[in-house]
Image (cartoon, rainbow, N blue to C red; front, side, top):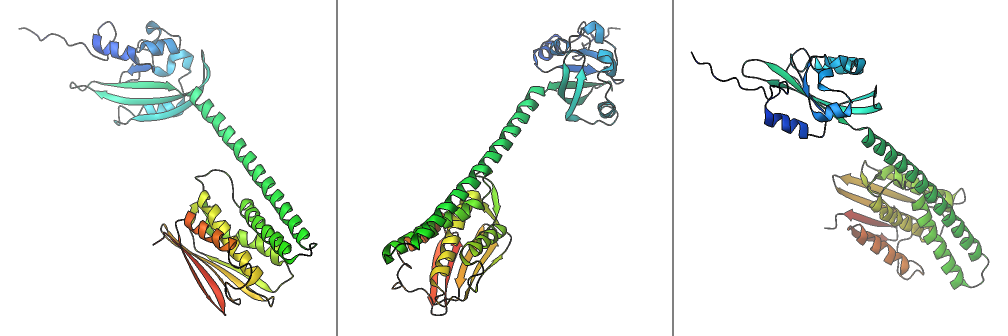
Length: 344
């Protein structure tokens, strides 16, 4: 009786193994190990022997955990590998940080998968990827990012403080000039710089893609305006009603400048009697949002000096940057500016 020729085991001992499979395994740069059902080493790739400075003879039929004087005897890893064949599980990117005899402290990613033969024989293919250098680079980049964030925040605060100082100097200068036109121009410049300084102070400069929570942002802006322009000197209130919603930091700059421009304008022109209220309302629905800035002042009339011109152009430009619709409603009982995104 003729028996069929024995087919070499593709994952067997190199002396008996499949030549093509051995060539493929030895070509792979990451270390590969073949283990039997009892987690004994059948064979390994050339990259494994080179990486860990070990030979085939030193590993053959040895328990995986006994290699390198037991340096792979890591309890958590051992538990995982012992479940691969009996429970048909896989191990994917399990990270091990360990002190290795010839390499020192290294971070390794372990991947393991069962190989099931037709004759019910089972083996395990295990790969080891050294990610130590990758982790060092990631850690270095993380530290650099933290340092950049700290520097940006420091620079942001310094810029805001400088703008605040310039704004205060302009206001002091305005009180000393005799010309009404010069005083108006200095006060106008003061308010523009104050608007930019307020927005600058309340934006965290961590990154352009950062999301800003609109409610706390607008509340913080208006608290600063209250402190700077009202203090305890006038019976005027600024109130913010805001729903949950976020926008990108770039949009937040435009939205903040828009809000401060209109609030400052109301504080300056809407209440000649010195008493009044300004309300900021923000509502969001998905990507859509509506911002309303209302006051109960004397209303907007183009004939009032300073209420048209540059301020109106700035507000219209900011609305255009936000791709939002701008609507103004005014009467002797007050003014309401509505900004709706997206522009319909």
